[in-house]
Image (cartoon, rainbow, N blue to C red; front, side):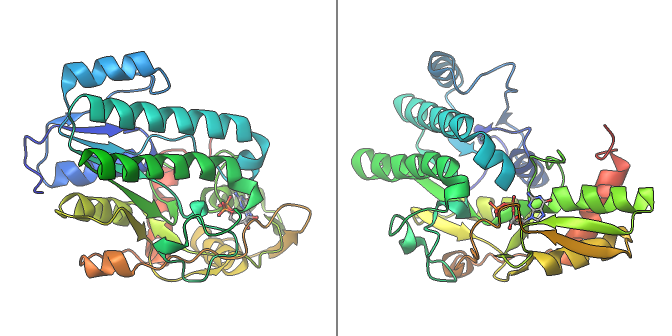
Length: 314
Ligand code: GDP
């Protein structure tokens, strides 16, 4: 499927980190007929409003990047909101897209949908083969429901609905909340503050031993366009950079990028989450996609964007 300058594409969640990266990537390709709605204009949890929107606008293609997301602490503190909102937006958007004749939909999942004890690197076939990581189970279950809906609609109705499973993401437009963010924005903020205050040390949550893989959101957006341009995409495709590192080492890289030279401590009373979740990215490699932005370059760029846009203020 080719993306034309007049392709009518609805990007659900276009103000989020992923959605805004997708908008940038599509505009860079000359696709201008984007259908964008803010939350105030269209509440994706409202099934009647979503159905009306699809009936009126008839998108040809949907990228479903709307989600309530958060780091390990937010996920375990607000599991009810995470499961309710993510289930609602997934089922409303997928079902209305199908009812209103949309043939192509790309759903965004997450690497946390895989079992906690999945083999590493994690192949897509590990889905639903074991228990989930408890700290993000509610979010994962909602995402699993969404991607399974896509698979069943594809099988039963013949529409091309498929899913991408990104690894841990970072980049412009991230959430920098001190407690509810993911590890990269959380640590960028904490190291920046420590440097500003002249503090001697910074504390990491958990033991610093879990390993994580990180992908710049612009690399993800390029991968999503690759999937959309593939005529017969796989039901699920993992998207990662292919390498992971311990949180402690990530913290050292961030300290260096920010220019913090003090001590790095750990707080084992905070959760570690899953020990490791490196994705097997052979399906995306076979389609000719790979990540281009190295972690150090991506972090430098992201920190510069934070300073420029006052992300740590307030
Ligand atoms: P996860 O991949 O779902 O566990 O998401 P996170 O990005 O929230 O956390 C990744 C890892 O970083 C976990 O092991 C956390 O315990 C650890 N971590 C260390 N410091 C922080 C922090 O300041 N914020 C967050 N969110 N995680 C941290």
